[in-house]
Image (cartoon, rainbow, N blue to C red; front, side):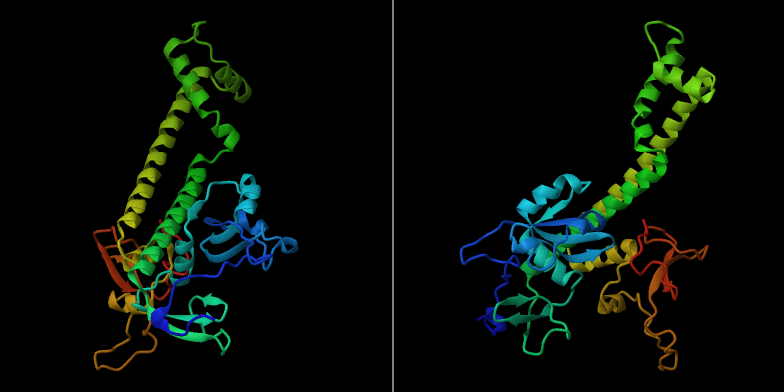
Length: 331
């Protein structure tokens, strides 16, 4: 039976995979992966025909990403269909991170049963579940912090991958020909009709699209330079944001990143401390209920337009519409 003494609490989580016998084991892995990629492979409950090797459960979903626990054999089976790489995390990062994401208090409430630990007490749990406050230790905070960092990294990389597709604005097949187009455009503009420098692909495009060859070559290089400029811009943007995430040393700091850039609201007490919530107090000390609890956002003092913390003219002001909040990306 699990101890009911919070001071003797040990952060062990029962393996959720059904056991065929007292010595039956299965290797479980923990990943952060796009929700749409993993959704077809989620197997709830005991798995396919109670086969412990087919286990896949999503435990946390946010902004299109899922934190998933999955049997190793099943992951290796579906890996070719996932469509992209995933971020692998440790068991402790998974359990502490999904349970205490964004937590800033030094004490958290957990619920225990005779068979294991249920993380994060909620009123929805059965009455007979033992509830206990425990210290949110430095070790627990550390695992939560690294989970949040890895989750943020995946969010950023996903978003900038979408931006990359937008600036390409062509099919993957056509994009794959860009290097050939650039090479042959330079060859033609440098060597002209020199037999030693043939340009078959450029010839084909010019003929099919009805372009004069020199004009086409110049257009290709102009578009290539424009694309490279836009590509370097989003690369710099993504690297700056990734560095901001990596420089965070506390959950408090990461909560600011998640609210500013991902629209994930920080805990109320943190928002109050940072004056990101209007307390509704009027000059006479009474409370204006129409203002109380309003979230805040960055506004440019000169233009009045919404902006980000990097804007030197940025100022926090009440934001009743909350366009920066509600699980929206703003980078």
